[in-house]
Length: 439
Image 1 (cartoon, rainbow, N blue to C red):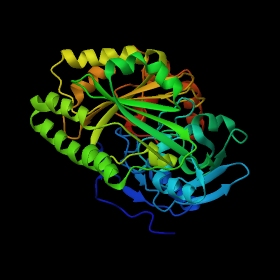
Image 2: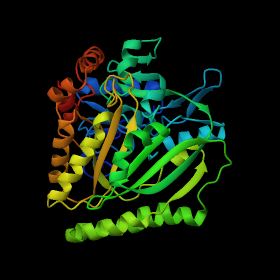
Image 3: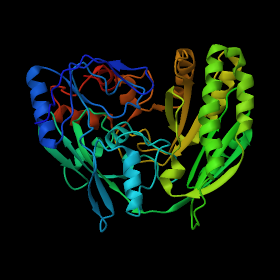
């Protein structure tokens, strides 16, 4: 066996730097059998276990003082089935590597979130999603899962094999076992045309339902302290491919969206009173553009400015009302918000703990530059969103507990019953899971 049990004195930090942990030891198993051995030894030693991906969650869902599982050696594509149109991939594979590999094979996922740094298990286990009229969550594209449970059993689940586990494990929060492989539905690679266009807040909210229903993928960003938004519509295209020009793409995606924005955020953190003026300038800096490319190059963008985030899913029919209340709150408060508010949508799905479980949803995400005090803003936003039956994203900052969440999710008890069966001794627990799932 590889040196799976190396002790560590180092501190693990997530991407945003707001969560830290000091595990007793770190394991990097190179096979499912090695992972099973790690779990059995942890159980014998009385240590809890948590797998960690790339740390892009803002909650402590992966934090542990026990054994931290790094999936660095559990990567790569196991199988491509062109008859079933599926790909089976090791759980530690980064989405960016999966997307590139699928493109070389002439294949693609149907939808993606807006970044692709996460591992496939980390992204699916926390409910990572994009925006879509008919498709959204990465987990909703799963056709089968493989995981190692607390007793070292390798459990495979799908609609036909252990269907009760499959119904809940696609978004499992790392609470049911360690996911080792994921089978996704894929389709022949296609082209998307993206149309980005500035639009006023009043126009976007007035036309929100039409914009969602007329486009396969619609999202927008509202710049607080202004009445300005930037919209993005992605729709399938017959081509030809017309990606952004090298220079113009660099100006939009790197210079403005990352470089200049980084400076603006730093100035805003140092001089909060300057933020409204910066927001007015920033909201006018991005111009309309149209480009066509393969899906992952359209869905995702580089995100180099680090931040903390809260996101709530509200019933889609209540999204505009919630947004207007959010805007009014910011305008009457002394808050100074340097980051845009992001709005996306998703169709209803059938995953027990999906934020879109059983209902069409709109996602409202708020962000603040890393190092900026966020409690006052996020508390005010959370108060608004819970008033609209909002469900918090599992991987983003929130204060909800199991009592609240059991009422918000009609199938919450279905998930906890499977958890009780698969992990009765709570090998995979931590403080975050105790709060959101109970113990």
